[in-house]
Length: 70
Image: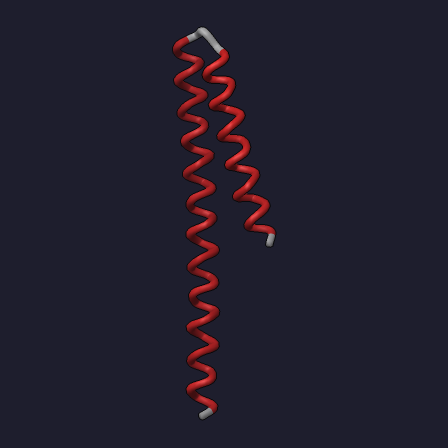
């Protein structure tokens, strides 16, 4: 459950950075904020992928244990 909260946090930060990028008239600052938003989204995606792999390994491990019991 903690991973979900972290993923959500990074996605919200990305949205904030994008809003700030749109609000500024400084092109360099705007681009930096858009890059920051992309970084936050990448981090959220990596966490989500990591969580899926952990779940997949748990399921595979449980299936292997069940086969061994038979």
